[in-house]
Image 1 (cartoon, rainbow, N blue to C red):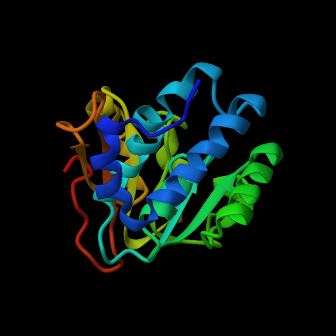
Image 2 (cartoon, one colour):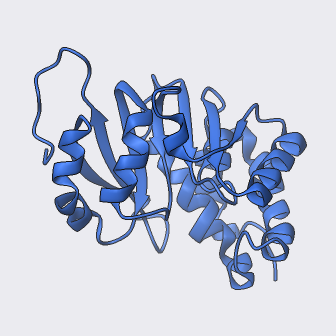
Length: 222
């Protein structure tokens, strides 16, 4: 098994990571070795770490506005997408929120090795409600949007945005979560596809704005 960046994907990796591509390669190498051993990824995922995981997460940065300064990754696990975003967007202060000690320890080791300036919090997202907010909150493969919104939208600063990675059922998940999004101040939910012409499986992102104080109450269906 190899975690080497395929030549066919190098142009995309260079576009997304720029001069920080070597950091992405170091992280992918760490994950290829420690991931299966520590239960962070399945052993079959090593050969497709770049396309299905690292670049899939890196494409998320296209959905993050240039003015964002803080980002939280809820249920960060192996560091996908939080670590990848921290590499691709060094202007962001990234906080990784993870409940499991062994995964939080791994994330701390990644930070110590790569020096990305990330904050690692061993906590449930709900424990931070009313205590912390971020310009952008993201998550990948954590839960259906209706449940996920209850954990994540309270962490989004007013006027900020939820940007979560989803699969082919993204539109249906928005429909199912309409009432929850509206109740939590989520407006203008929409689905975006990134990397459609560059990777076999493009990145699907659901973006939801959190209504700013004093603004008109919008339609949570967008």
